Length: 357
Ligand code: NAD
Ligand code: DAU
Image (cartoon, rainbow, N blue to C red; front, side, top):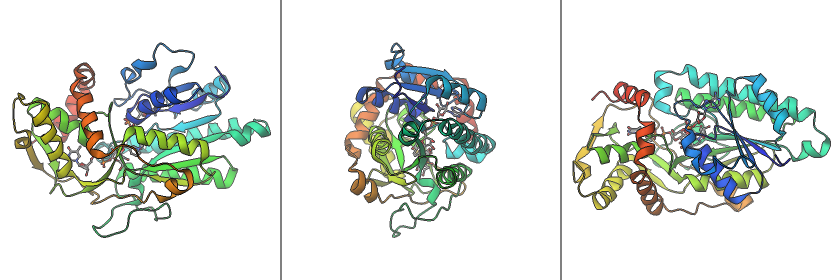
């Protein structure tokens, strides 16, 4: 493989697989894709590149397994690591935080240590060119009130869920590796993503599936919690931009400039579904909306100030929510086999446990 190869971790998950596909469509460099294939990882997301072994190599490994990571770095000698691999679902972190500490904290630590050992042995030119890009979240900043200004890169960390705390810990380790060892790191903190290949435990795909199937659409609490929604392709383009031109040791907020209450999102999806699927078991689909017990510690509002990445690197989101959500719904409606495959055994157990309503 070419020397300019990059290593992507978690590239069989939602954002990681979109990133791999977007990268290969836009860049010359090959991708080595390390993923442990947890319930959230799915090789079918990568069908479009499975035949292209000169530009895409899949490696089934755990980021906590330092020996495998070290071997992989020596074998492929990537010029960058783009680190997506994580446990990513807040509700699961409430039920079982152990996996979040293991992968998000210990796994990131393991990856940083092996990246550091690999980087230390490089010659000066390779050392200067190397990048470790850590993909993180707006949830590390905590929760905003209705009139608070959006999160900035300098907002103090105040994570409220085990997921957010584990991501905050990993961000701080990345920061320390830059300041202590000079490892050339970059960190991105993004708002809520949506788009193709998102596992249907997350709000938007879950609502689409339940609307199709005539099942109750669960809205936590009063449905007034606010998230800033970003189309996944825009996130992938932002990561490529930060990788190419980001300043070492810096963090960049990424967001869609698109704050919406959960209930607004759910109602809009139901409206589009009424138009696209008038013969579904229950219409209007909004009849399915069911208010359920709130998530413990549920953050009220996230909002991102993205002026740093816009001003310094010239990135801006391209997709509006209205076009992005329609594309997303149409994608799910045309992917019944993908849905059938990801909603098998362990998915059903999770839904029964979480939504026994
Ligand atoms: P996801 O849950 O869809 O995918 C995670 C991937 O990581 C899966 O393919 C899984 O198999 C893999 N993985 C998990 N543990 C692993 C391990 N120990 N070793 C190797 N691979 C492992 O997650 P996502 O939504 O695509 O999120 C990707 C990254 O982006 C995460 O770091 C998440 O914190 C961050 N992020 C997500 C969002 C969002 O809205 N989804 C927003 C901001 C940041
Ligand atoms: O903000 C970025 C984060 O966005 C990422 O770091 C996380 O990995 C990602 O999962 C996401 O976290 P959220 O908790 O915001 O996403 P989720 O889709 O789980 O929930 C979105 C909102 O919808 C949240 O306020 C909870 C609510 N919700 C969620 C589900 C699954 C419901 O009302 N009903 C539901 O069934």
